[in-house]
Image 1 (cartoon, one colour):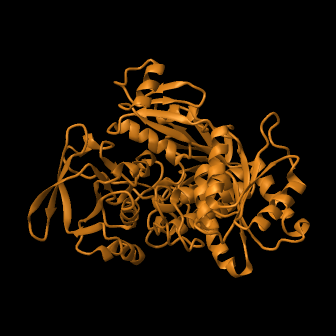
Image 2 (cartoon, one colour; image 1 turned 30 degrees about the vertical axis):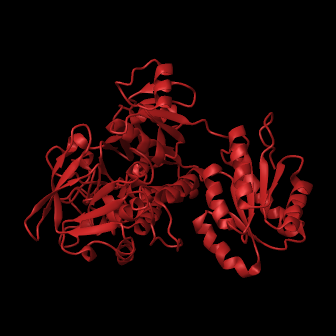
Length: 560
């Protein structure tokens, strides 16, 4: 096992148990094996454990493993670990439990991303304790466990670009701290940077570099995200980092393909913005889109996939066996095969004056970074599908009230039953069917809405400072014009959908075979997930299509 970084304070192993005898025994066994390399910290309540973690955080200490007893008064081990994640998200988490509580321990795997649970007693530790802790420490040491200096963002709450920067950093899992320009600390940072605050946001990178109104690509380059490929030629280029793209990156890289994933904004796609995905296989208590995305991203990179962020693809060129992907900055990357997994983008709400207020009270998608700003406010959500329902449930934890505006007559026509039941159980959520937004009001930010009720024909003016829009989605595939065949809606045609009426090969198809199931009109170019015509538009099916696409890529490469 590798030592922690030389020259730094020893990383800590924290054990929390309200039984003094058990607490001493855990600490004793840990010190016996790990005392020379790690500092063992003992706490006898969840609150004492949290206090110890916060003190270590202030000192800049590292915490490698946290072990907590399940049955503790005032705060259970699961509740403690859930709060401990906020302080040290990279620490490995272990729950100590009796045999009767193994069900709760298994449930905790989803609730707090538990790494392991140990049954008491663990004698002999050489067989039941040390192998587990050894594996966790090895995993922690292989990760980037060092403290990451925070990026600072100074902006105005009604600045559209300030909102965009925060969303970009959050979705890319970049630690940052937000300062409002009209508050004391924000003003101090502006003064120190030599700016008057007229142009915002101002971003201070971890190294102290100041960026004024940065583009996503500038921002990505300064906070440690990869924006340019390491090689010129790959086996597989995956365009789009949603569930389908991440699934393909995992399977492609794990099966030995030189794989690069190219993402325009942030991995995860629309699924990554979801506050809670509750119908994904294997997560009975649900999983946040951010958590699922982070796991998939780490899994892909562990297998050797290369991930590029803030790279906008502008064209796809075919030259013999090579497929070349060109970017907005003029650079390019080539490969033997390409997977289109660009997903879809939320449609824009066609209301006069709305575009000027986007990012200033009007948001497309969940905009999770805005949730805290909804505290005590009346929030409106436009849309009646699952993404709108998930956002309503999530924002109801912060807002005074949430009103779901649905154009159709029945919510059941577009939303899953489990979400409808959840919404009905939240008293602060109101559903208004056959209702649409016809006008918006506000100067520098949203201040009010005009709501038209199709059932009565009446229009009502309401005060509103935040509105989130989920009104369907459209593919971003205009850049494929003249290269890849699409349907009338812009979705990419694949496999059987390309065939002529009598089952013949499509016009211009050169190989002496029919297109594979996920193959587009260009041999060696595949499509998966929401961008593909007739796809299921579900997270699980997108992941499955990403994996299937890799299998077909192998078949295609074997035929070259």
